[in-house]
Structures are given as C-alpha cells and as structure tokens.
Length: 285
Image (cartoon, helix red, strand yellow):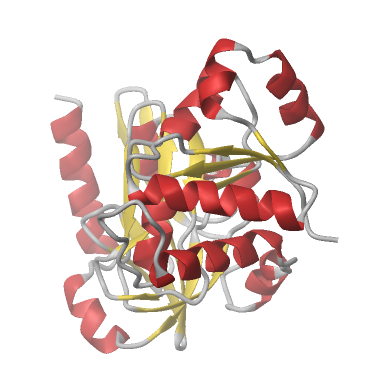
C-alpha cells in the first residue's frame, strides 16, 4: 500500500509553484489515504489539523524558497516526516515552470514525477550503503579556535570545494556531504532537502539543501555526474549532519561523469585545511 500523509501544501496560489503544490496534494488524496491540512484555516483553528498531523506522517510541500509551509509547520511545532520543494524539484528535473497559474503539460508532468517519488516504495537507503566503498572509519585532523573544534578527514580520496562541501571518490562513484565547518556555522539543522535521484548535475550546481534556524545552506556539488542515491535517514533525522557530517551525515552518492576535469577545481586535504583555518579565524575575530 502506498504511504499516506497529512499534507501541508504551500498556500501561494498566486504563483505557478503554489498551484503545482496544490495539484500534488490533491493527487495524493485521490490515490492514497492522505488528507490535506488547509494552511489558511490551520492558522486560525488548528485543533482538527493537530490531531491529523499526529495520526499520519506529515508531508510539507513548499512552493519556493520562501518555504511558507515549512515555517507554518515550525510555528505549530509539528514533526515533519517528508518535505518537497516544487521549485527545487522543477530545477532537478529540468522543467521550467510557467509564469501563469494554469497548469500546462510540463507542470502536470512535474506533479506526476513528485507523486511517484512520494508514493513508490524505495529501498534506496540500503542500496546506498552498498553502492560505494567508503572507509569503515576515518582519521581526522583537528583545528581548534576558542571553544570550537573543527574536524577534517585525512584519508586519500577526499576532496573539498571552497563552498564547504566534501566528496569522497571511489572509482567512478562518489559520496558527497558538507564539512564540519558548514554544519557548525549553521548550528542545529532542522530540514534536509535532498537532490532528486537520477538528476544530472554539473560541478558547482546545487545538490539539495539543508536548513537551520539561522539560514538555508545550498549544497554546491563538488563534482559533475548523476545522483544515484540519497541519505534518506536525514529526512527524519537531519541532526545526523550535526553529529557527524562525514560518516552518518553524508548527503548523496553520484556516478561521476568527468572527475579528471572536476578535481582541477577542488582542494585535497592540505589545501582545504588552510581554507578552513582562514574561514574560522576570520569568523571568530
């Protein structure tokens, strides 16, 4: 049976992304046992919807970077189970959203893609653990500044970009994540927006995002390739990134397309360690 949700959609029906959000929500109620939480009514009378959100897993569908649905869920102290951003999904699937409000062929195609992503049972978490030969344990170099401690893995195969994202390369496969500096700068991470499995990325394009109470951090991919897996544990437990961004808190896995060129714009351990120290010293002056 397909998973059913309490669905909290975007209320921005004056934008195309908000209309797609509504379409996905309606499709879920038509084909699964999901129920919609009306964001407008929820603000003024929340008793009914609080009960629904406790009985079913909560799916938040944001339309754009404003993330009004996510903010409403946070205001109501709801635990989010799954989260989708329409604009990010459109970008990941190379779909340009219309400037109008009526859904055309591309918008309906996107709503179907998202519906299938939400309802088809996947075993990607287990598959991802077996898809790359990642070290069983890591050796870290530590840089301390005042009460803060920043760790950086020293193993061969790790590379870093100046956007504070790491990549571990094994053959033609890679695993990516954010560095210790990135997660400490954000503080407590509350949301994880993964890249779409199957999405093709160029080096320095967005590979999902993470969000704390301080800011939204766009994950800038250090490599080009195709996303083959995401760390789905982070959807329910984004705090794993705070606990260990290199091991349990990795973001995604990628099949590489041009690493020989990509690595010319990346740092190995020694180079990024200098970048890390400079950033920490400047931030804590």
